Image (tube, rainbow, N blue to C red; front, side, top):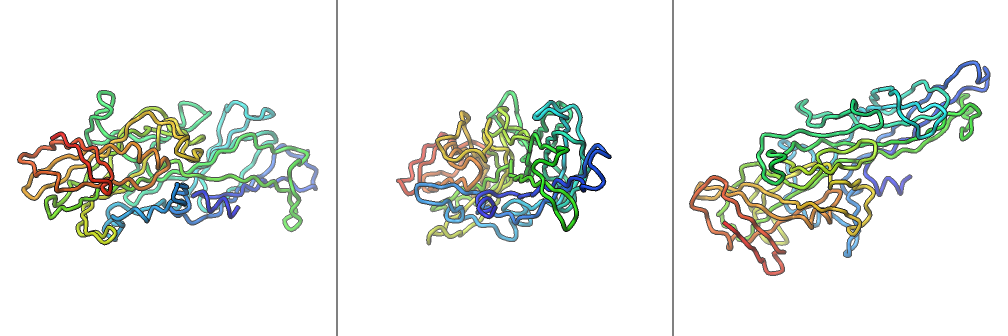
Amino acid sequence: MKRIMNRVLGLIGFLWFTGCTPEPPLHLFDGGDVTINLPMVKLELDTYWDYTTIYGQYNWRDEWYYGWDEADQRLFGNIGYNEPDIYLLRRYYTGSEPMGTHTSVLSNSIRGNTFRGRYNWGFWDILVWNDVTTPDGVQSLNFDEQTSLEYVRAYTNQSMMTTRYQAPRYTHAFYQPEDLFSAYEQAIDINRDLRGFEYDAENNVYVRKLSMVLEPITYIYLTQVILHNNHSKIVGVDGTANLSGFGRSTVVNTGITDDDVITVYYNTRFKTNCDKNGEAVDIAGGRLMTFGICGQNANRIKKREDVEDTNQHYLDLTMLFNNGMDSTFVFDVTEQVRRRWKGGVITVELDMDTVRIPSRSGGSAFNAIVKDFEDGGTHEFDL
């Protein structure tokens, strides 16, 4: 269990199925009580972004120069995942048929780490995910439980931010989802002859232990546009940014993102005189959450070669020049997203000696293909 906790960011729950005492006889009632125990685990980016690269274990701090100060915390919240304290539980009884069709659902909410409910003998499927809480009470995540009892779908809606990447189907970027964790177990056998149960003499009950792992099914990306040789040419950002090529929704049961491609809208901030290996640079940085690459459960991917992604990923943000003009910069970050399929740092480095100050405003776009700065700083601009 310790090894699992070190490799997977999540909440590891032991679901304790409490049977009936041997006296009175089991046949006197047609069901049993169940206690579900969900102990808390501290959430750390380090334990979840467990990529292994050719250079060894991935450490996001080694390439994250933007930082996360008190102003970022106040404006955008935590840089990592937030630990849930309320969970939503869905129980599906399939009778004598394991993996059977869901014909009804029992819904419960859990505050804390314990749930106790009554179960009929037979097979059950159990779905658990965290309730969403936000500081301002405004929630972007929506949940569809009406279309089918076989699954729950989580999705967000379009924002007011326009985007051209998925036009004409979608002309606006979508709100980013909040932190979402889930676990799903099928064919849980609550049987009359207590196969698989253990006797708890202290409490005089039979128990069956089932291990479930609550995994994140929304993924954090930290983006930073690093400006070399800026010399106050760019003085700020308008605070908005987009990252394209992600799925619009995910199935809570499986964690698989759908194939409906969208752009995600998020906020950014500009910092000057940041340290990058001894060099003073200016950085436009931000944090966003996504459902991940289309058609994938990122938790099941082990290496870059297993990523199946046919969509392009573009990062765009509007920067403000010292003459009062503004321009929207667009960067192709497709390969970086594929290398960080379950979240991580996305970096663009730009030598401002190669960028001229625009003479007009209105979001004129730089379509920038940016090579690694250390490899010569090759940039192609179409202004």
